[in-house]
Image: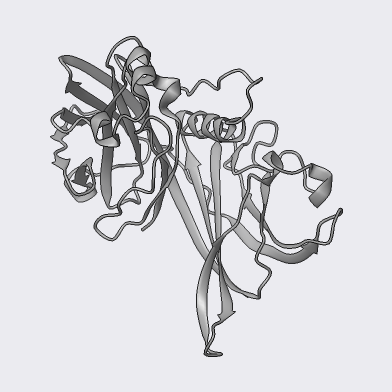
Length: 311
């Protein structure tokens, strides 16, 4: 099973973290500047889901701004906290200690040893640096299960001569409740190699193109997003349009609709804005939301609906 997460470790940008136990982990680099403080603080980063085989938690720390300014090349290892006490509890007050895994550089426990259940509330408690930080999340009780077959098209940009492949993803919102979603679509393409044989190449569709191009260039609705809420559209079919520069024939598309909690949604939206405005000197700094008491970071949850469509 693959999970898609963002990490908070590092002074500037992080590289892709190691995957473990057969789970491919995709990480979007993050500027930790939003978490700088006047003191060392605990930073918790964890996204949990019933469908994941592992519960993984990153524990790191901030450095005072004065320290970072004097030493902007602090090694990534220096941000890690490897000797924290990490405990996960459910609403029944059942708990488990989550041990540190030096290979993944995270605190890891198998979900079979502490099941993550829909609708249940979990609290994480971290003790380190002579401090204690806590956070809670409630797993979304429902997950959208009604997905329509993606509409795949080869299109031309309205301006210029470039072509692109688009995928329109549609799914039914869960009615009568506030919902937030993360949309992922990955295409398998036929690619001819130098020996004239064919191999499979994976391409992930980009649902954030509205941040980098004028909407009129692609004729795409302004509400197209990778992260979508159902505000004003309760119970309706929601749509997201992704694009990729590859225009080869698509044989199979894997669609994942993550039904996420509000902390997950707001955190990832802020990260995308931070990435977009990274080089803009006249834009106010983007504040990264935190739901951690006694520290910083995010502890949130989601459910996964996955379906593979063939063409």
